[in-house]
Length: 397
Ligand SMILES: Nc1ncnc2c1ncn2[C@@H]1O[C@H](COP(=O)(O)OP(=O)(O)OP(=O)(O)O)[C@@H](O)[C@H]1O
Ligand SMILES: [Mg+2]
Image 1 (spheres, rainbow, N blue to C red):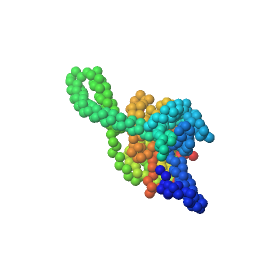
Image 2 (spheres, helix red, strand yellow; image 1 turned 90 degrees about the horizontal axis):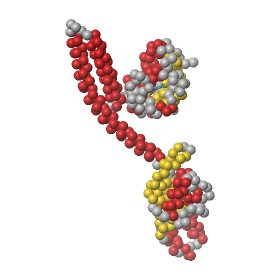
Image 3 (cartoon, rainbow, N blue to C red; image 1 turned 90 degrees about the vertical axis):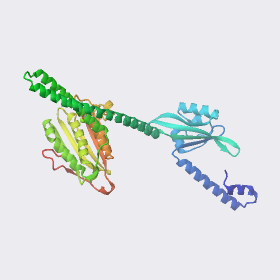
Image 4 (cartoon, rainbow, N blue to C red; image 1 turned 180 degrees about the horizontal axis):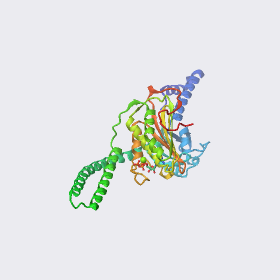
């Protein structure tokens, strides 16, 4: 629809002075510029085609998403598109003058696969249909989020079910365990005590303990955590865990090198759980160095976050396993539960943090915990300092 002032001006155009015409033209140009700027600023792609299907307008997003060849205009839209599937789609739908709503395409590009949704509607002018409007939406992130949400939902349903079963298993396990202890007592009390029987009972007891541990670990991994976030010093949590593993590291011929940057700001943390997460990572690192090696722990304050990096010079993780190791029950160890990293990840997520990982087979791995620093704790200019509280551990040169 034309603006009212333009309607009025047109109806008495022959009576207008050149001054008035110039001013009206100026108005039209500025409205046009504003509309063009609005279309160009849109995140979605817009292409307007005339009745011959030639693109008379395309905004920057459309050019980018469809990878339109420059200098378009004189030929139908599909001529300017490099993607064969899109060419075919536009040829068929534009010539058939179809209305399309959100037809999805997966386009391969240098940055990976992009999922786009294309809609085609008739461009309605005052004298009827004067072309087609093509609307292109990049729905890659939307789809990704939907998939993640679906996955999280099915995982949540599954874990609730599994937690229920684990809980139910716990009760009979408890009573079996008591009965076995009673049986053992009875066997020992008998005058003809059989060593074979005691041995078998011992094995049964051990297996029951193992089952109980699996149930306890599982419930810990899936249940909502009782996390209590308090303002605390993450550097101290790191130091305490390093101190804790020091004797084991020494026994295994592993050099511990810990570095903490000075004036680490306090963060919102649950010390007990954070220490558990750190311990899990350090134990994995030590397990990856059966022949000894170096375990480095650095605590940095960088880019508004605390980064705690735990680096080993161990076996490293094969690339194909990198996405698997955080999954519950994934383990390559004979006696591993495969819940260590699952629990660690959960604890860090409860701190609104993240874990990143770099690993090279045969060279070692670095797990980095990222923890956000609350606004009011932010400080400037951190400096390095070697941990002083570590008895026997080597400070990094
Ligand atoms: N630093 C590391 N170097 C090499 N492999 C690692 C490292 N950390 C984890 N992994 C791999 O990831 C797997 C899963 O680790 P996770 O801590 O979840 O379970 P686990 O250590 O096997 O068992 P648990 O923690 O119960 O003892 C390990 O079995 C191992 O294969
Ligand atoms: Mg582990």
